[in-house]
Image 1 (cartoon, rainbow, N blue to C red):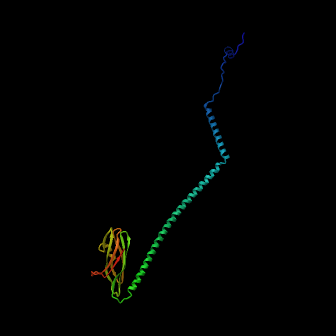
Image 2: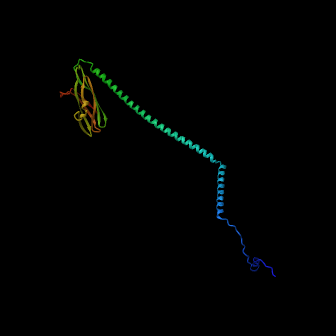
Image 3: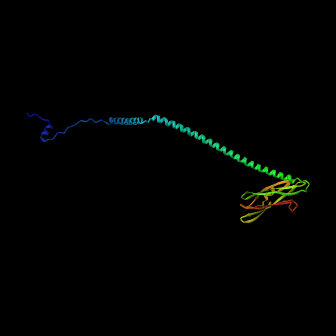
Length: 251
């Protein structure tokens, strides 16, 4: 009786064909694969982070020290901002005070100059009047003294003068002043009479005094007009002939 041979070996000896081999594998379910994959990824991330942090430590970078330094710098920056804001407010306050002080100083300087000029003028007038009234034996006469005119603005001139009575004075003088101005405007000559042409000057030109009266006012002119001459006449209410006349010629 012949001995049975394995089929694989028989096929190999007969036909030169090897019988296929079978392997048995165990498949894991997704219930186990997902936690395992998550754990592997966590492990890789932890190792990478530790390696990165350790590398920074070896290179001299300390995260906690940097965080402390940053916090300190931010605190100092906030303090500097507060101080800068306070200094700006203080500077604004000082600047405002300085402007007020400069304005007050300028006003006082102007007032001082005006008072100085007024005092000088009063001294000159006083000296003139003392000399003028020195001889009381003379008959009372009226004269116009210190006639002047200056440009006040582009369309106005300021005039001033003294009307003085000398000699023996007993009663008050009443009357008015008549002014006649010659102007040069745009190559033409213009004549202006006060108070006729400018009634608002009538009050300033009225006279009521015993010894002297200062007269001053504003002559309105066309813009840029040049005053060439100014004549002042002292008139009495019932007289057509002036009591005194004075002419001022300007260049």
